[in-house]
Image: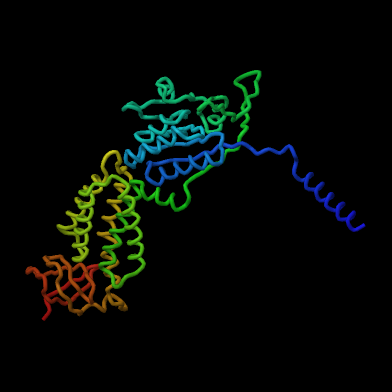
Length: 399
């Protein structure tokens, strides 16, 4: 009796499992879609190579590369290996240069040419042999196999791959239903698995972009000067260290001019000299000219720095050095008092000749100063504060 109950219980469980798992269920076919934008740096090339191997191992119907790139930043041998992988992989590869304004130049164009199937969306361009081709021209030149209408959007591009043969394998990506009017309606028969760079690789890829690396370098240099004129090491020093490390990585990946870096360092030094005196003088002019010139020549072909980050970087560093840092230095080193009138009678020392305006040091802080005397006050002279006019001190020789 016990055996009969046990057998009946097992049979009931087996029946429930068979009802829960339909016998007709079949694994869904899929396509892998990887998005690549910006320069093809080592991070992106590693990502593409990994994506190819993953698609092979997973048995993807096709690997679609969504591409928008101005070129490659890796050496020719590294790019050749990637192209070889694209040409010899067992998974069919299709490249879609997608989105209005998308482009494929230099090494990126080689990826398009290496793929068995490719297409350009409306407004996209590809540069081949020094010629910039639109979708129609690229099709006539044999660079792309899908026309502008088929590559209009990612969905239509995947659907248009249906029925095409790659390495003796016919792709099945969509079902087309005839319509009374217009082209047949397409329904995708595959699932799309979208893949992007992970967080850390994405960060490194972003850092290696020309404007980001330049602005990080500018921020790091400005914060270093800030720390030189403030007491102790604070948060600014830590932020400067992180910014300079990230900028160093980006500049190492990008084609950077050593002369550009030298000019940027010279400009920063020039600013620092006049921050010490408290007023803009000769070295401020040297700093502005050197920093602007260094920003222009920082990168070599084919990379260039756009006008927006260039102007933002130069204007930002100039404002920091001429306005932000002097005020910060005064506030950090000045002694708190009740009312400015309490400074009248204080003694100080001339830092920059007062003739009739200059800079004096009072209470360990630098102040703009002026004198009504005809004889200039030389650097090192002892002075007494006799009045305060706005942010300036009126001084006279100390008795």
